[in-house]
Length: 67
Image (cartoon, rainbow, N blue to C red):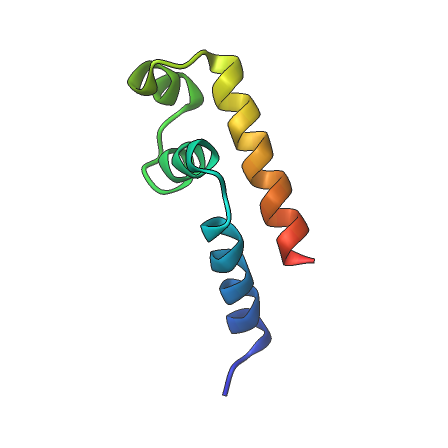
């Protein structure tokens, strides 16, 4: 039997799988690896603004897909 929490987790994972590659990479690096935006920018050769834009895109997609 699934619980509401299980359903939300499944929705979240499905939403994350829909992220474009760069948004996924930034989201993963931040949320799973625990890197700061500055560290992600340095590692990936991106500007801080690009990292912020990709994270915002990831959050928007996840929120939209969770509703």
